[in-house]
Image (cartoon, rainbow, N blue to C red; front, top):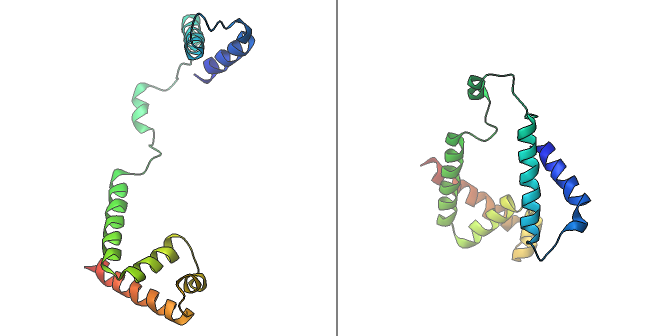
Length: 136
């Protein structure tokens, strides 16, 4: 497929001066060249043939995540967001900012106009409440 696409690009490049906008749109012209190159390749018998039997296709590993892992992550995210929503708005906001956006406690304290020790206390108490909620 990549070879056919490369042939199509070369053909398009070499024949760009022959394009007639009165006959077809640019995309139609490009698609026709690509289709014709594909047909030419099929007719020439130059298709890539696999030495492996069709049964071997079942052994090919899927690069994606397992569905069970995806569901587990989705469930964990839903539970975490639910528990964060149960916290005070201020506490949930600073925890989200610290852990999801990566702001330091110092930067959060400055942004919120609170002393650093207070910020650390808010986050610590909020994390303890989150743990309790998530363990239920």
